[in-house]
Structures are given as C-alpha cells and as structure tokens.
Image (cartoon, rainbow, N blue to C red; front, top):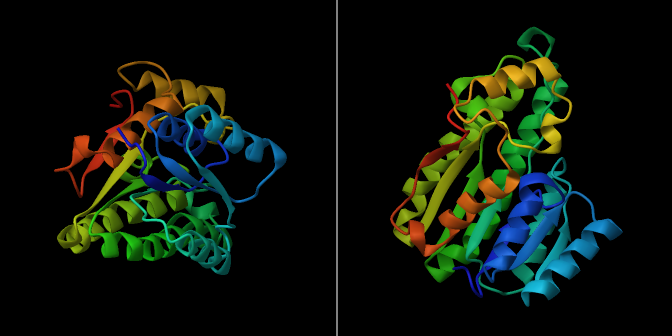
Length: 246
C-alpha cells in the first residue's frame, strides 16, 4: 500500500507515533522517525523494525520546544535529497489545568510545540512535496479541540489551531496535488492518559459507544489510509476516531 514511499513521522518515540512507524514500515514505507531524544532502546526499535520489513528507517533527534532544533532537523531531512511522499505530525504535549490556573509560560510552551514547531517542519517538508507535485500530510489533533474538555484549555486551543491549519493548507496546497487531512483521536491507550484520574477516565469511556479506549494501532491504520492512494480524493477533512463519543 505504501511500498517505497518516504514518510516523515514526528513523535515517534512512543504511543501513536511509535505505532505509526511500525504500521507504515509493515506497508513498505521508508521512514524518518523523529523523536525529541534518541536512546539505545529507540535506536534498537528502529533498526529491528527496518530489518524485519526490509525498509529504511532514519532516526532523527529534534527538540520541539526549540524552533532552531526543528529547523535543523528539517535541514537534515531535506539534505537526503530523497522525495518526501508523506508527513505525519504526531508530536505534541499537554499540561492539564483549568483556565484560571493556566500559566502564560505553559500556554506558550504548548503552542510552541503543538503549533509552531509542527507548522515550521511542515513548511520545510512542503518544499520537497511541491517540487514533486504530490504528497500527503496528516495532522493529529484531538476530540478536545472539537468538543472541549474541562481542564485542557491550552491543549484544546493548540489542537484546534491544527484543525484551522489543516483546512487552510488543504486549500493552498491542492493545486500542487498535496493533500492535507487531520485526525482527532478520542481516549487512546497511550502514556498521555496514564495520569488521568481513574474516575475521570471511567467517565470519558462511559461517554463512548464502544466503552473502551482506542488502541494506537487503530489510529495508525487511519493514518496509513490517509497516506495511501485509498484516500486520493480526500483533503481538508477532520476525522474523529473516538469510539463514538457522545
């Protein structure tokens, strides 16, 4: 489905990003696996996954709290001279707090990672896609950006910005045959939900039709769909994957 395509994945260290690397590799894609740090475990994961699927994985370190670091990572990707067929913007952070208790420093940091760093990397990667006259970009937002979640004002607002960016980029890049879509996950079984109090998590799951958390692999499947030709006439879409949240 994605054989010999070259795809950039951010937030590849864990959760949805890591699962996405595994899924795309199984479909034959070569991957730039971008992480905020590279440890021996992650490097071993990249090496083993590449070997198992007979593809190439290029681990890249980039601190998304530093715009200079993101620009440097972007230059490393473009230096390869390989055509870039896809970009998956997974990297993101959150810090829960009610609005009146949200500090300006936390608000700025979350915007810097979830919006600024993401758009700067996208801007760089687009250069290759525009030259090639094709490409697919997948942004990872959240249902909290659509529905609102109490205590997540900074996260919700930053992820809502990605929805707006998706809509605008789909308009701007369509003439270059570049598609831009957005996925809004619900409660997914990742580290981001490990610190959620049990009663709050239980209440959220009760608001879903399926009464369970989603698996990262289920989100990765949808990402692969958007990167493939199966979605060739889809752009500017915001797709929820939330188990039927009320």
